[in-house]
Image 1 (cartoon, rainbow over the protein chains, first blue to last red):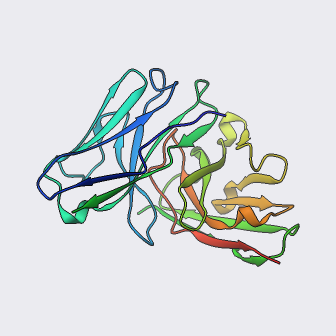
Image 2 (tube, rainbow over the protein chains, first blue to last red):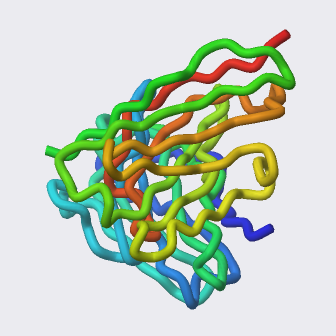
Amino acid sequence: SYELTQPPSVSVSPGQTANITCSGDALPKQYGYWYRQKPGQAPVMIIYKDNERSSGVPERFSGSSSGTIVTLTISRVQAEDEADYYCQSADITGTYLVFGGGTRLTVL
Amino acid sequence: EVQLVESGGGLVKPGGSLRLSCAASGFAFSHVWMSWVRQAPGKGLEWVGRIKSKTDGETTHHAAPVKGRFTISREDSKSTLYLHMNSLKTEDTAVYYCATDGGFFDYWGQGILVTVSP
């Protein structure tokens, strides 16, 4: 079955930039989406169609795509950005949806 | 305001059955594809399956781990989505979310816990 691969964890100091990658063979053909999840809460979509910010999401959050990798970039990281981040996409046919394993962002 | 409210969770023994419901409001439910997503304790998100709108044939697709055991259905007259779960296994223990599905998930319910344990 189709898989998306993310690093399990990323750590950055406040004010620095965090990059979270997500790789999958179908990403050149299918959009990537990013969700943020804080403990005890439902996920919230923050980036759609590779690089579009959802309403209300700060400009510090951006997305990009290159080949089989989509990347979530968080500039000027703040303590409140500490959360789990998940990428999501579809298989090459668009029939089956899939999440990456998730990346825990730790703000040092 | 879009609202999705899951219900029907609880404790069930392995091999048992359970039906989850998701009551939708604030949008034209009948026109929208819907999905179920689950999250085992301390684990990541896992897509369970989707159902298309009636206009698109109410076609369903289920992820491999649940295919043949779980069935998604909808009742547009009640703006309600269902997840029928049979032959439950301990590994099905998770918080189950319903979500609107446009190939992505822009609206989510608050989630409902299903525990499968002897």
